[in-house]
Image (cartoon, rainbow, N blue to C red; front, side):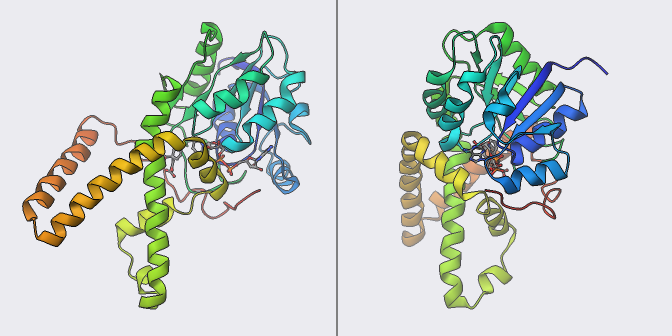
Length: 311
Ligand SMILES: NC(=O)c1ccc[n+]([C@@H]2O[C@H](COP(=O)([O-])OP(=O)(O)OC[C@H]3O[C@@H](n4cnc5c(N)ncnc54)[C@H](O)[C@@H]3O)[C@@H](O)[C@H]2O)c1
Ligand SMILES: O=C(O)C(=O)C[C@]1(C(=O)O)C=C[C@@H](O)C=C1
């Protein structure tokens, strides 16, 4: 087995993404030592109990002290507080990265706290499940999924290459993207779809009172997919929408226009409009499959039995 890419890696926040990183790093011997911290004592206890990392620390600063790589794996809204706390202990030459689902807001929140001589290289693995907490992670989460690296101004090429090598070692394909472009793309492919799923499940829940639970009992596959997405962590998604406001509102505006057009077609019996629209969208799905980009996540049931929400 090859030598670790980093001597010591600190994971701040010990939820789905951090725990998957810990498993994936151990699978390929990518870190000499892994330290970890989570805000809640219960999460720290669970992490220690299952041996998730080599050392569970009571504070983020303790975990980050002396680390070669510190990865912020907390909800987007908590990034700034963590960056402020760890700043004084960061060692010169170390890299700070994150896994947040929004990039511009994280850069604005974290970059001002990064001391001179420390590299800040934001990243975002495009992989997840609806489960949270330290028991939810699994080593294969990032296999064949994208990890987007979002370099900031004057990013150090060697430090960026090293972080890319870590993500590749964890099974991901790495691409580089500008922060604003990232936030717009993710508003289309991830953030707005989540909002739609949350809304559809909310509508069904309202209707349940009318239909006496039949909506849940007879829910077809499409709706079940919505319920899986809508079971995702409320804190994480609250922060995503509050910090990727502009792009999400832009995409929601376009979505609403299209929805109204389809609504009118249904009301006026315009079958051609419906048929043409569905033909176009089917071609997009087929294009994704033909391009070999249907990277459906691995077995989502894997963490289901033990996963639980952690604070
Ligand atoms: N879940 C996904 O599908 C997914 C995918 C890619 C990226 N992300 C991003 O990864 C990050 C973590 O998401 P997750 O799914 O692992 O969440 P999670 O809820 O499973 O874990 C979050 C962890 O952060 C800890 N935490 C919260 N506030 C903290 C603070 N102030 N200090 C220290 N610890 C704190 C919690 O105790 C918990 O252990 C988020 O920024 C999210 O946007 C999530
Ligand atoms: O599959 C899921 O459960 C996810 O929601 C994962 C997903 C996505 O939308 O694809 C969610 C948020 C991320 O930041 C990255 C990945």
